[in-house]
Each structure stands twice: as C-alpha cells, then as structure tokens.
Amino acid sequence: MSDISSTDKEFLDTLEHWLQSQPEILVLIRPSRAAGKKSFEFFSSFTALSERLHQLRASTNIIVFKQPQLPLRGVVDDAFIESCLSSIPDGAEFVVVETVPRTAGRHSWFHQSAGEPHAELREALEDSRGSPVAVGVYPPWLQEGPDVISAIVPDEHGVVTRGVY
Image 1 (cartoon, helix red, strand yellow):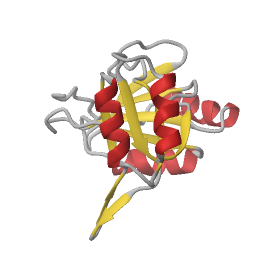
Image 2 (cartoon, rainbow, N blue to C red):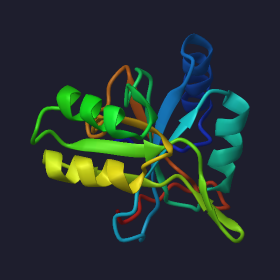
Image 3 (cartoon, one colour):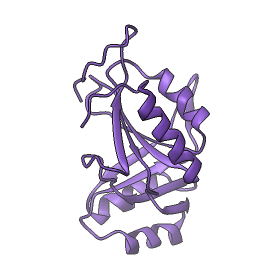
Image 4 (spheres, one colour):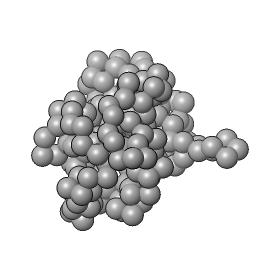
C-alpha cells in the first residue's frame, strides 16, 4: 500500500474522475490505533467524499475501489437472505453494510458485518433485518492497481505517517 497523502492532488483527481465515470465508489476507512476497526462507506459525489476525508484523523488509511462492490442490494427479509446465501459461496469472506446510518444520540454509523461461513452471513443479515443493505464478497483491499488506490490522512502539518491498523 502506498504512503501518499489523502490531500495529494493526483489522488483527489483520480477520485473525482472515478465519480464522474461511476454512479458510486466504495471507500474502506481504517483508523489508526482503533483495534482493527474498519468502515465501508459509499459515495456518489466528490463533494461528499471530500467532506468525509476532512473529518478523518491523521494516519487513517483510506482504500478506494473504482469498480462496483457489494452488488447485492435490498432490504433484508427472508427472500433477500436466501438470495445472498445462493449468490455468495459458503466459505467466501463476505461484507454486509447497512446503507442508512444507525443513530444513537449524536453519533451515527453505517452498521456492518463480515465473516466467512453461511451461518455467519445469515446471522449478519438477521441483525440487519428490515434495513437496506449492500452485500457481497469482501473487496480486494490489499491489491492496489488501476481500480484500487489508497492514501493516508496527513497530520496538521501535512506529514503522512502510516498508522497501526
């Protein structure tokens, strides 16, 4: 993974170009020193993505996917659960991301789950029953290339320091 800054002009230009050519992109956000916590978030506008990047703490790793990810979309009910179980091979690592944030007081987040066997997929979907979700095989986040790029949020002085993830 690269150690480029999330404020790097080429990085930002790439994101803007991707959002002009795709209806949405998926961003994996990995805060440093957060016990492995990750957040998957969808963006359909460069403005919204830019605002989100400015909210992140220094040393946060951002991985962006150009190609569509988590293609199974819908509100979780019995039929949707069966569709997911038949579309994702048992044993393949999956991700379930709610597409409407949960809220508790002043805090909001996109609930998500990941796992491997179908039993865990069923459990993750049951936990999101009635909610709109995006589901699919875990994105190839360790494979940078023309369709996957990453950056690190710099500190207040513009210095990029890789964090502990």
